[in-house]
Image (cartoon, rainbow, N blue to C red; front, side, top):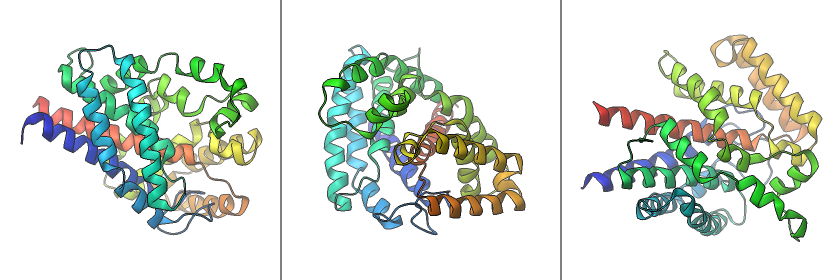
Length: 296
């Protein structure tokens, strides 16, 4: 197998693994995991398995699209990735019987996979296949995406939840996250996850503990769309209190996570945007580790 094919295969596998790790992490307050369906009545753990299994080829194609556009400005790659993403959404809905399990992850991970391919194709020394390089490329590719997308929403007949939340609260959602170069991941969740991976704790504990940091920092549009701004801030405060109590690293913190899960399920609160960022965190960690191996 040639080096480029090997890297493409590894990165696409990391994307799928990230989706699987996210849903497997347990307990996740309000979210589908191995213990329960979270604040959802239309999906379960196995729905996510079916969806993830259907999407491997999508991420493989997104990486290859990036390679194909290696000689072009990276901004030209974005519409190609979004087109591929819409096709992936159809595959997801076919696999799940019409349930939206991974729409946000298709966008977030798809952008990153495309950037990986673009960097690989160019053998780009400016960016490099590191988390900083990939996020920097994503920031460059998605510059202006919020202004462009939100400028036209007044003329749109059917708005997405993200567009509705921009009108109501000014939340930029996943578009703002990619345009920032995944700032909350680079600055918060990825450093936390790296630290935890060096500790003598389980993968599961590392994932859930990292999720708490994401929940503390994120204005989750999924929470806002089901509830209101007060609930968004309530969830952020609760996550902060659990971190202060030790999170998954202390018995008290672990019990607080379980209690928060029960509370969010009861109140029908699902921090789905935070779950997407947990998958992004694991993906970037994996690519970073691969990059380090290639440098030695």
